[in-house]
Length: 294
Image 1 (cartoon, rainbow, N blue to C red):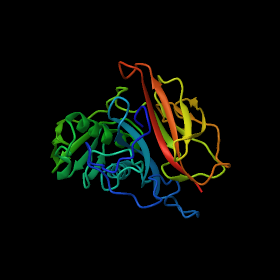
Image 2: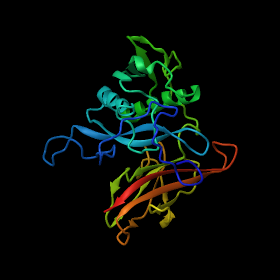
Image 3: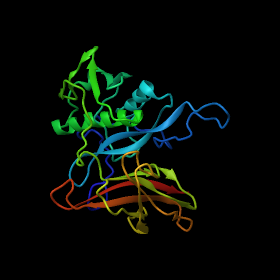
Image 4: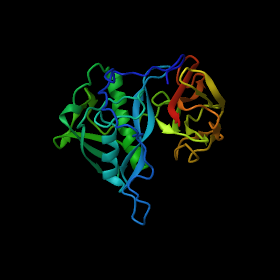
């Protein structure tokens, strides 16, 4: 994820964040078929985009993965998505982290022009080791997640005890918090599929999101020793296409053949170069997922 060199796998999730509880083995954070038994009953859960914080070439940014939340939509879906970004649930990708401690979110109410979220006592204070800038990014982590669950842009009002919280994660938030749309808030490239720890057989295709100003997405697949075994360029697709969002473009690869690879864990990396849109110097940004060839 960070530019240059091999990415670190951090064991300590407390740096500038609330950390996370380890997911149970095999849990990827995304379950498109969750709640379905293969019969006629409607699915009760769905995979929704949630946002976490991670290092990048220019400091912390928001990265996206998917979590299983109620498929009912509205307030229940927003609350489920917000609870998925707390330390109690946490990210599937070990390089991601969260600024929100356990029991941060009690209720969420969707109105026409805002989402009102009741937060717990633990969410009022600055997370241990976090800077004010990181805490403000934590607010955006919640705003982006709530908007993704709703499918539309709405500000988030944080309340505690039924009144405006005033301070959230140790920084001022007296009014509804709007989405920060600056390019520097989110990563220019994100992997949507495969998910972390996914088993791949024969071949697999990768998809993700990419910033509008990025022209090219390169990808590579490396073995446990860091040796590149596959590489190529992804095809950029329009907003609403594979890997993208309704408002942001995506990218996708051709099927990547893994049929001749030995069993083991491989790392898929998507990488782009920012030539100055979000930073004063050229920088490379990347996101990755570990996949397993049985």
